[in-house]
Length: 104
Image 1 (cartoon, rainbow, N blue to C red):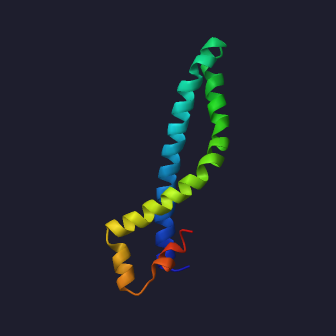
Image 2 (cartoon, rainbow, N blue to C red; image 1 turned 90 degrees about the vertical axis):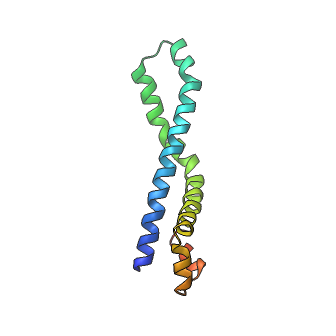
Image 3 (cartoon, helix red, strand yellow; image 1 turned 45 degrees about the vertical axis):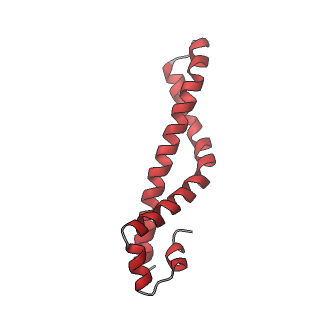
């Protein structure tokens, strides 16, 4: 694994964790406001509602992971382009397909 691969993987994973965390937070927030009436109506405790949302996170991750991987790849390539790192790599003779290989 070359230094370039490690750098690209580090950038990609950082972006993916950021995207994944934000999308899971938005999903849980929307789901919370949709279901809060049901919990209040059934007279359930806050702890039970929190447990419900905590146990729902693996299902949310299963749904959102493909979208997060795609968004993280696009963001990573976009940030490389914006900071002119992609142009430097291209000027150094590295093809765009070689740059996208560790990400895919």
